Amino acid sequence: MLFSAAALALLGSAAAACGEPPPPPEVDELAAQLDRARADSQLASDAAAATPPPPTAQALTAVASERSAHAQALSDELVRMVGKKAPTATPTSTTVAPAKAPTTEDVVAALRQSADAAAQSAATQSGYRAGLLGSIAASCTAAYSVALVPPKAAQ
Picture 1 (cartoon, rainbow, N blue to C red):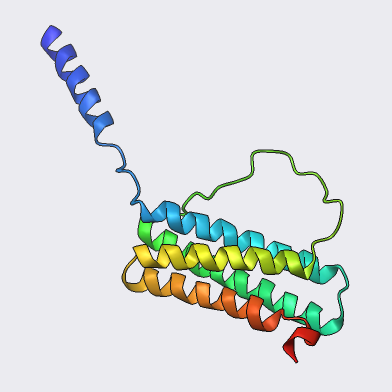
Picture 2: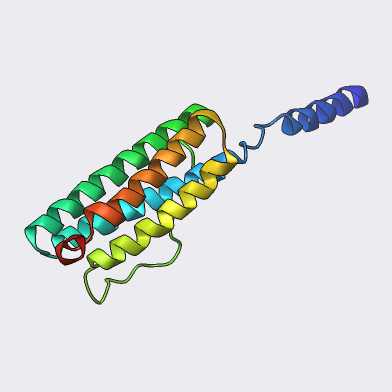
């Protein structure tokens, strides 16, 4: 009986040690990019809804759509990597309605940060992930330097 109890205890501790291995470190980097893409998409949508001039509203809507597509591509890659939906950061504080609607300048600032972060992450990756992040960095850069340039500055 004592032998059975000892064997059961040993088996239980061995089973606990054989749990799921930790996710690869790339998961955290891609999850951060996913959170950033979702936030940028929402910010651009909110800025477009704040009734800017029609060309700017259209550009903001296009940026929101592009960042949403980036989020989907990142989500797909995370699922492929870990075999299930990967967790992403969620805000822990309660959100308060902003005092003012986001502006195009807010979106440009967020896209600059996203482009820089994606480019830095791309440099640490290889293969498909490096290409995906490089493409995201290029898209964000084009969005803030071409699509969202005010008409006066573009001339």
